[in-house]
Amino acid sequence: MPSQARCVFGGIVLRNQMAVCGMAAVLVLALQSPASADPAGDQGGAATATAADAGAQAAADVGGDPISDYFAHWHDRVHEAQSTQPSWITPIATVTPRLEQEFRYDELAQSLGNGANVDVYDGGKGLELIPTTTNEVLINLPPYQVRSNKNPASGFNDWPFLTIKQRLISANADNGDYIVTAFLGVQAPTGIAKFTNDAWVITPTIAGGKGWGRFDIQATLGVPIPLENESVIGTSLVSNTTFQYHVGQYFWPEFEVNLTHWFDGLRGGKTQVFLTPGIVFGRFQLPSRAKLILAVGYQVAVSPALTLKPALTPAYDHAWIGSFRVAF
Image 1 (cartoon, rainbow, N blue to C red):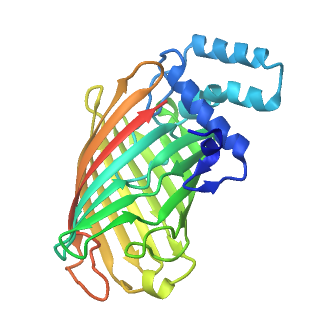
Image 2 (image 1 turned 60 degrees about the horizontal axis):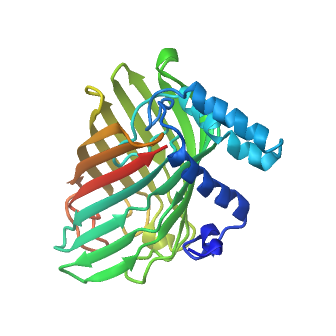
């Protein structure tokens, strides 16, 4: 890949190219660093003295340069961030309030109520990084969709390219096992004509969770706000709630309730509810510090009654969801 492409995402050159390239370097170094048990997070465990000594030695080697020193201590900040929050695993559909550092890829196979099928590749996930002890930055990939059986089409959908998390309060299992986090997501209208909403969408979200031993509840409440075409898209209230239990070392069965209520637009006044049973498997040790997490869930619409016009509601009847993640 040409060196310039390392700072280009989806054809957009980001302004702070040094920071983005540095984050990419962190990902590579993370997968090359010695195996260790990491702090509470999708990688699990506690950081070792070896990793800390390596960070200190790296800092000494760079001679105190602020940028080099920042990246030399990257994993120290990740350890501090994750050791001061709950150790639950990320649910299938609900965005966790926890700070995560991982690469994630999802696929969805949706069956629409009008007879069409839609396969979604990537699902708008991507690289998740922890640049400070209370922040996470999600640099997502654009989802690619293939619609078949009716009105066939294939191409990219609108791109939820950036989400920023700000953790407000948190405590690990020894100190209360709870967390509250604020999100801000941005979606660009980059999809093909048959998929796009033709509008930028800003989504402020509040998320939280509480654990009791091996059981936890994680939930989000957000308001996607279209900056154009509101009369068609509508402003909505979106909530996701996950009930999760940790069985043994590697099994996390869960049950989710995913709800969307539209205040206006073509679906104005309607409330869409999906129920999503599923299970997450992990965290499995990979070479170096990385951990593998896999998940599968089945989503089924239970409300409202199917309507085809003025907009298909529910958006689909049922779907299989698969998730692949490598945490570091």
